[in-house]
Amino acid sequence: QVQLVESGGGLVQPGGSLRLSCAASGFTFSRHAMNWYRQAPGKQRESVATISSRGDTNYADSVKGRFTISRDNAKNTLYLQMNSLKPEDTAVYYCYRRTMIGNGDWGQGTQVTVSS
Image (cartoon, rainbow, N blue to C red; front, side, top):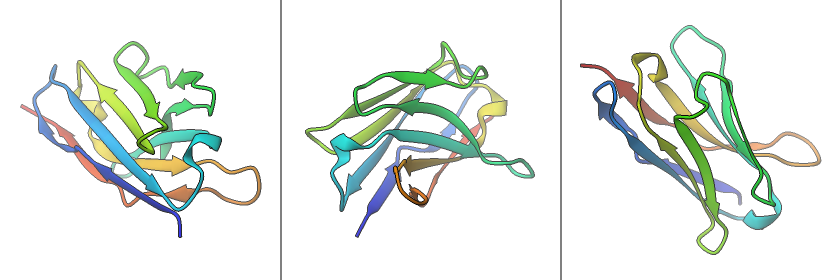
């Protein structure tokens, strides 16, 4: 059974940093592209970063230069390093497994709140 478990969220001040982790199990992690999504209240869920199985990365314009997505295939773990956080980054952040057939899989989400 596929499992994606996020951790590392919390309350931080503007300009602060957080590192989110996603522990993956139940599939061959190294074969899958992965995403971090986020959803703020009243807004659509959006992809903020993606990483291919090869390690190529892409970012939403809103986080480019501030966030870094990475993966450790030996640990079956996905990371999102978030620096220079802004209040508009406040959202629930989700780990997502991309698949070639059918829909992907979601973690349960972790809350990130950026406020003074």
